[in-house]
Every structure is written in C-alpha cells, then in structure tokens.
Amino acid sequence: MNLKKVSIIRWILIMLGCFLLIISLIPTMKPTKVIPKSIDKEAKIALKAYPELENVTIKFIIKPSLNKSFMKAQPNFWDLLRPFRKRSYRIYMSDTFELDQLSLKLTDIPSNIVVGWLAHELGHIMDYESRSTPSLIYYGIRYALSSGFVKEAERNADLFAINHNMVDYILATKRFILDNANLSESYKNHIRKNYLSPDEIIYIVQEREQEIEAKREDNPQNETKKTPI
Ligand SMILES: [Zn+2]
Image (cartoon, rainbow, N blue to C red; front, side, top):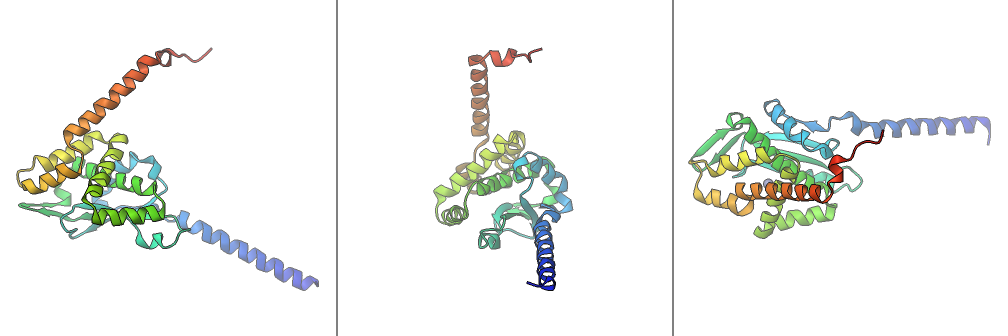
C-alpha cells in the first residue's frame, strides 16, 4: 500500500472518530428536564425527591384539557420502537382541572397539591423505568383493559411517592380531592377505589416507623457505635 493510500485511510478514520464523538455527545448536551415556567418551582421540589431520575429525560407539558384526568405520565412512544435509545417520558398536565362542578386553573391550585400530584406521576415513571420495553407495552395493555391493574398501578405510584418522603404532599393531594364539596361522590369513589387513602398512607408510614424502631431495638449497638479513635 502506498503512502498516499495510508494517509487517506488515516484521514477517514479520524473523521469517523470525530463524527462518532459528536453523535455520542449530542444527548448529553440536551437538558434532561423541560419544565414550563408556571410549574417550575413545584416540578423542581418533586424532582428533588427522586434523585434516581436525575439523568432521565422528562418533558412536562401543559395541555388545554386531558379528558377527565388532571395529569398523566407516559413513555415517549417512538423511543419504545428504538431499543438502543434511552427512554424518555412526558408528564401531561391539564391547564384547567374540570370535573363535575369544579373548574380550576392549574395556576390556582395550591402549590403543595401540585407537588403531590407531580410526585405521584414521577412514581409512575419510577415504575416504568424498572420495566423492560415488552413489560412496559404489556403494562399499557393491562392498564387499558383491566380495572384491577389500574388499581395496582395507581397505588404503586402512590407508594413510590411515599417511599421518596413525599408523604405530606401526597396526603394533601388526596385530602384536596376527597374533602372537595364540588366533586361528585362517584369521582371520589373512583379515587378511593384506585388510590391509597389518607388512612392507608398514615398506616403505611406508621408501620414503617415501627419496623425501623424494632430494628433499632434489635441492634442497639448501631445507635451507640462510635468511630474508633
Ligand atoms: Zn396515576
């Protein structure tokens, strides 16, 4: 092989290396979170509770209406068709929560209620992240067809939020719905049936505290363990 050919091949390899480097850097240059200004504070409080989602791409999108729901979290459908691409998610929010006699603008809902709602949606994303793509597709099918599975999925999302120290926010959101005189009993029954109730949440938290206390009593040395000098 003559010298000219060697230098052309070397040049092609360098260009190819540069191209691959640029391509691999593109995703890291994009911000992983896209948050509308009107919910910036609330989204950041909720996201702070989920450090596992720091590098997960989540886009928060406010829509005029969401058909009877106020928020929903979904994987980006096109990512599911590209197995080697990192999954990204969208959290859709309704600009106005309209149900029964209630019509509330997102910006008029108390801040801690929005945080609690977002903490629940991020709980769904934690659940999605723990699943393979076929399992996530199966999740979508079961959610659409089985009311039993809806209950399992919704309570799971609440549990993720509780386990991420968002108890006060989640409780505030549940009470906001269940104590609201402008919402019908049938909607409240739907919430009671599919989500964790305030009493269940308090029970779960107390159970956990008792477990921690029992472990502490079983291993008292953990408390008094001092760093050797
Ligand atoms: Zn949900």
